[in-house]
Image 1 (cartoon, rainbow, N blue to C red):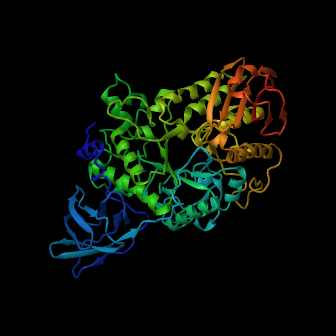
Image 2 (cartoon, one colour):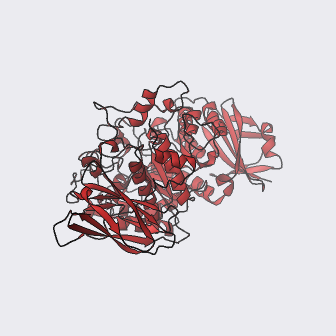
Image 3 (tube, rainbow, N blue to C red):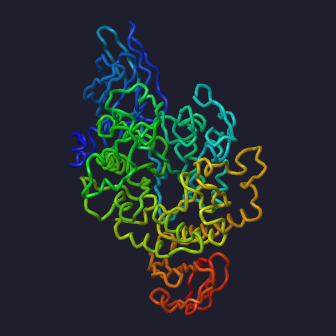
Length: 630
């Protein structure tokens, strides 16, 4: 794959100078002001506004308007220099490059475009950066992420269910492919529910515009990078959503897609140039095989298909090797952080993006927002393959060395699922998932989980066995990392992903007409499940030993797996699991390395005493979380 000079500069240490030419959030800040004669109309500038005081002073403006590419550009604004323009293959686009000096002041500059005697001016806003230290907090192990699909969680504003001009302008809750009407206001209405559960962070699937004619509810086929989907709310409402979440002690993780856009994206329907997207003589999918990226014997064509093939027929693959495209993407994701104060990014389909771009993107984001949490989806089959896509101690391969702090921990997910299927799987699968942490720079920045919007629901995977359910939740909430729970798991929502829509059902009570409302009351097994999660999650929140303590695990023996979370200050929690159908009397002397100095314990969930650490009684199909006492 060709590496452009832009990337060479980034990887040599220059700070994405040509790649970080800035971006804003939302709709244009001012309408075009035309000259005396008819001139090209400017209908869009991306980013729509920017800020003074950014660490990277360079800003790339992508200007769109009929015939604007024939124009020359100029401006006069103290502290802002015009570095030149770049004409593109499509005459409806013009790239304007600016450098913003450190002493530049906020205000509106005027861009002047001349095409012969025709003159067009465009106001462009430079804002002051937000100095609130409570913004962009990042994530730590003390957090507990609640993942949800906005369209399927709760409908807080029925007025935006149908939005004029969108390609899907109706709701149909009886269809798994249609819009159902959930929105940002619906999530906000239930902040108290999330806090009661013990969640500290919210991860909605993408909230940006997905104006596709079919199955647009999921959010992964972006059609406008700078606009919240109007069926969820407005850009201003999203900014307020983040503020209100912070006021309630809840952080916000934004789900983003670097690799592909939707086929109705305005930049695909009216492409700036043919090289903005990957194209083959005939439609070509990705081979969906990230192993080729670090295969020492791999073929170039296989790597090309992995990175350049389309994710799906309606999801064109963005050419991140094009410096203009790379800059557009980098600026866009800086823009969302500065505009909203969000706390983290979850990066969809991380391994499918061009490796050199991933390094440039990660560096640019981290340089500007060092506190921002970043974790990617690397749905891989081995511990080593997963670790390759996070910061690790492994050598670079094919010029790629990940700078992504963490990943979604599929190995933990697979380990827990496999261990709990059927009559009880091999506990060493979970043990090995943790043993592989030696490859990471810091595995505590990974995000363990049980299921998500693309997978069969955990409760169904384990055969709707409530004892096993509690075991999985106990592991999730006591292991290292920042745990993530998929919406509805806490009330035993179930189904298999055949197709995906079956695991993306509406949360009961999210709509005024729902007969069951789990937000208000949770009788029976759903209530027991909620209480179990809330008990452990809130204990975890108030006991740093589970959020920042060290971890020591013992090799599973005779169907029993034991690990400890502990601190140098003397706090210690024992997590002991019996994955067999029979009760066990476990010889606790084996754990003396961690239990020395402690005389007894107390079950965190039930409050029952554990009087003897020498011989520990563990019921069948049980994970006991025991706070040790001196």
